[in-house]
Amino acid sequence: MHHPRSRHPLQRLTASLTAFALLAGCATTQASRIGADDGMDACRPQRVALDSTGNYYAQDMIRGAALGAVSGGVLGGLIGAAATGRTRDIAIGAGAGVLAGGALGAAGGYLAAKQRQAQDQASLNAAIGGDLANENAQIDRTQLAFNQLIDCRLMAAEAIRQDVRSGRTVLEAGRLQMADLRTRVQQDIAIARRINQQIGTRGAEFDTAIDAVAPGTRSQVAARSAGPPAPARPRAPVPLRIRPEPNAPEIGRIAANEPVRVKPAGSNFALVETDGGLRGYAPASSFPGQRQAAPVGGEGGSTRELAASNIAKRDNFSESVTNAERAAQGGGFELAG
Image 1 (cartoon, rainbow, N blue to C red):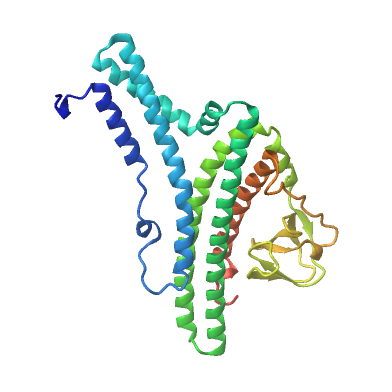
Image 2 (spheres, rainbow, N blue to C red):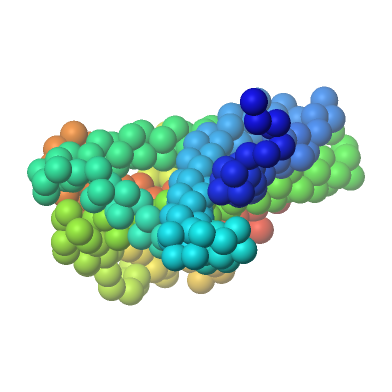
């Protein structure tokens, strides 16, 4: 019987590579990512919910890269072994394979893996379409969690203002409370930025696949939002909202006939930017002559429609993070709002 330590060098190398890949995929704890609970944050559940949605993007991408590196390493080791049969060459070949496998996992690895599994173009389209549908659902969950977190912060800001106006809170205490709230919002946005970066990393893999199964989709989606903002003036005072939804929280107001710049957005809204840098959404009908945004592909149709929705959802989440960041820097979290 062989002693456990007498394993073949290739087996030991494979085990080492697997362990390395698993270590590379280890995630940080939630407390280290979002901070410890100080018992003073009324929006803590929403922050936890947002961060939790990020586990999906991080875990899957790390696992894919790790498996690509391990399989590439083993393949390189086998090539080296076949050439010389020497342990040293196995290690050298495996090292080169890890680099090649890692590169594959980092750029185009998703499409390559799907192509290896697919029997024909139809099955490739179906497999990628299914993954896009799942990705879209996950982005929807992340978007909802972020919306709920920012709504909670904006409601907290308004409560502080009302308490100061009514005299329930003295002015200096109100300023301290708002400063603390702004700090928390900036931490929220840092979490959202990290998740947005992870979505973008996955999106780059999907973009490669989209070009293979639905060529031209990305340029079509880009064309819908192309063009610079147009100058406009509202007919009457208009509230600006954090999202293109009628009941979304207000982050500011623009006066009648105030000069602004607008771009079409979804749901018959326009993205509005003032000369002071405030950005928010208002009904497109508030601005004479403004065109409506063209609809983006549906949720449950062809691979092309799912791909168009995926691109739009990624863009929308990124835009919402940017808008929240501007609100945190502007009037959304000022005492005199």
